[in-house]
Length: 161
Ligand SMILES: CC(C)(COP(=O)(O)OP(=O)(O)OC[C@H]1O[C@@H](n2cnc3c(N)ncnc32)[C@H](O)[C@@H]1OP(=O)(O)O)[C@@H](O)C(=O)NCCC(=O)NCCS
Image (cartoon, rainbow, N blue to C red; front, side, top):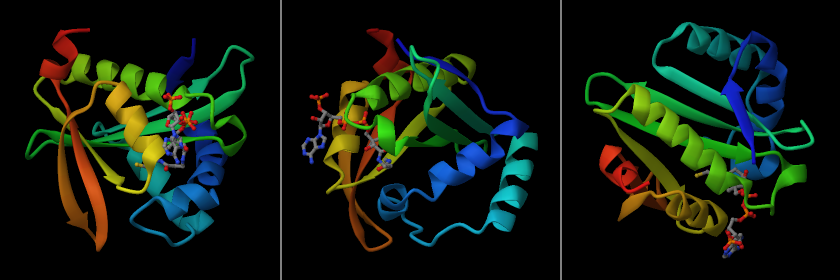
């Protein structure tokens, strides 16, 4: 069983290192390495925002194993989710539980929202993790020239849990 908590200021370097993980950048629409100064500015702004839900996970050994970010858009009642698992902890199926727990937590606080996940078609581990976590309604779309799936999660998905 994994534990999670909301991110805080002291997580700034942890999140920076995870964000610049090569596979994570490769699977992101923005492939450029993130500059530390830009990260600091972005993170400090996000932490002040009520629309930013960032969760840090740890495993039974108290090792920090990854993060989930959910960004709320108040104008259209959608939110977008992103995830990464620390490279040393991949292959354990952690992502499913992380997606499930954070999506539930977010939807409980924001029951009127739909969470969207945009996943590269070739990112099979991510697709599988989101489907197993209860994401539905796969749509195919080309996003920034990359063939992608768009998955949805809402209170309706959650009702059967
Ligand atoms: C995507 C990611 C979060 C998945 O983390 P994880 O929980 O360690 O995923 P796993 O490696 O345990 O794989 C999850 C499932 O996908 C399957 N899978 C993994 N690679 C696969 C592949 N190439 N083809 C088919 N299935 C694959 C696994 O077998 C597992 O299935 P199971 O639950 O039936 O055993 C992790 O790889 C990561 O952090 N990647 C970099 C960042 C990223 O891509 N984020 C998502 C952007 S949308």
